[in-house]
Amino acid sequence: MPLFDTPAPDPLSALTRPFQGAIFDCDGTLADTMPLHYRAWDRALRERGAELSEALFYELGGVPTEDIIRILNDRFGYTLDVQETAAAKEALYEEILPQLEPVGPVVALVREYRGRYPMAVASGGIRRLVAQTLQSLDLTSAFAAVCTAEDVVHGKPAPDLFLLAASRIGVEPTECIVFEDSDLGLEAASRAGMQGVDVRPWLPPRG
Image (cartoon, rainbow, N blue to C red; front, side, top):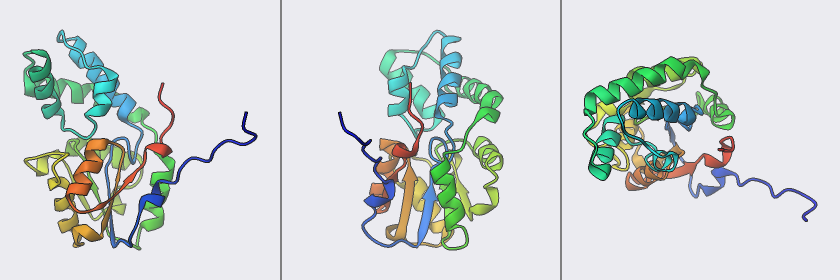
């Protein structure tokens, strides 16, 4: 049995070159909201005779709500009304949003970078809920731009959201770093030509 615990990897060690701007996902990156989102999904879908496993939920991290419903309909033969189900899920999430907790190391970096680098949020969530999350974390004024699912046609893993965020803070994509908690989000960052930082080692243990 080892005498000492193996230190957790530092996500920032993945960076291989300097950067001039920082882009942050919101849910699961700035705030540990993913368990809350799953609770809202589980209830909304069960009330409509459908289900979403927790494993698939995390696999689809960063995908916009309406797109997830379309994926479920296609994959499992559900006939969920996309807009109605999405509205119900988001309303349930909004009820429990005050229970969110910050991801401490990521929020600490935002405060460290503030004034040193232009920063943006690029979230697959909807603007109203992203705004509430940033307000709860007292981070609204830290970001020069907030880009959400409503701002692009193609969500993650397409690079569009990150490219838009880079343009709004006036930094070349190759000079941006992206903080993300999902494989799809990190893929989107890579496709945008940006360095990705996987924040999952900083998240609380699941289960």
